[in-house]
Length: 266
Image (cartoon, rainbow, N blue to C red; front, side):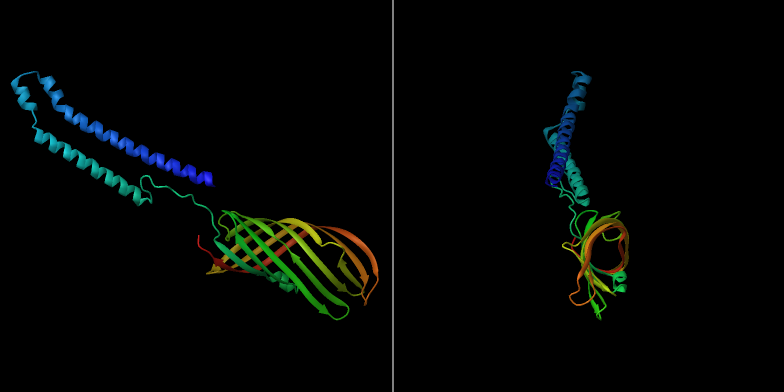
């Protein structure tokens, strides 16, 4: 990026200097030709007194002509400078490269996860011209009696590429997921064994602006997950029954979220 800014400054400075140099040379050539015109006319008319009388110009007249030409060039140069200024440029001015900056931070929550009794919140921030990064966090602390409980904690960071402006319209994402769980269900209890659930996937989504700072977001993703878990008898201090490793291919991300955006200075 530093190289881009430097090159832009050099090119703009070079163009301005070249235009000024061309203007100066044209002015010099014009004045020179006008000064030589009477002598050329004198040469064509011969050495007669009539020719001399027709082409003779006093010093005062020549001085006035030179002043008029210089005034004309000054007016032309002023007009040229004003035209450049109207487009946001001035001679020998540098042009700063347009560097993408953070334009928003979004906070959101997924209604689909809430429907499954999983609390969740996510944050998203723009990191490039068409890129953003989102970090959702989901947890479930529910315990319903001695036979049923769902305790989970998961994160699913995602990098998003927006087809237009980040934070509006269509996007594609690449995500990873990490999760821990301890689930009681009827006669068995399932718990991650030694390591969390791991996986990754790709997704598609669309964000619709409602107006102001509010928006709605739909996202659907698929991918892979691997989990290793122990199975216990669902009683106090129940013995371990077995340990299994499972591979999963399918839906890994489903969201219908409400979004609130904090717009930052661009």
